Length: 176
Image (cartoon, rainbow, N blue to C red; front, side, top):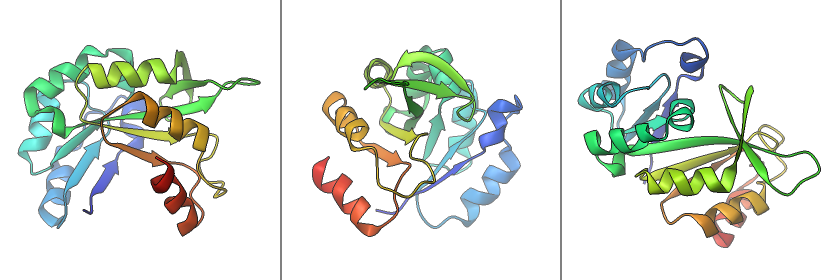
């Protein structure tokens, strides 16, 4: 099914509260399931966003900094409505990946696989992985990254970064 994900990428970097008025307008106009992310730091904020007609909330930096937030939000709105977004970048001269936050500007130096397991264990209902290395290059997904994620977690996953053709979508779906 279709779903729209709207992320305020500046909210966390600028330490801004979610724009509830804008979120309410989006939810009122959207004719498909809507997921909102950006600036969410508490379960109360997530509940307020869901009350505006949004089906899911996406959390990233705050979930990495304080993984308990995932459980708190899942308890407040249900695991099926909690999406955790991980921005990842391959370590130099390595096969492993680090998780980055704040729009890919802050390296947490946390191993991606370890964080993905933790996200699932804390109660996220879905995981979104964005390959910083492949974002915008349109040369295909980072298949080792995607494959390792699929082997690690059981929850639904969405992959971003690298798609340049319909064949790229087909390959990631067929293989993962």
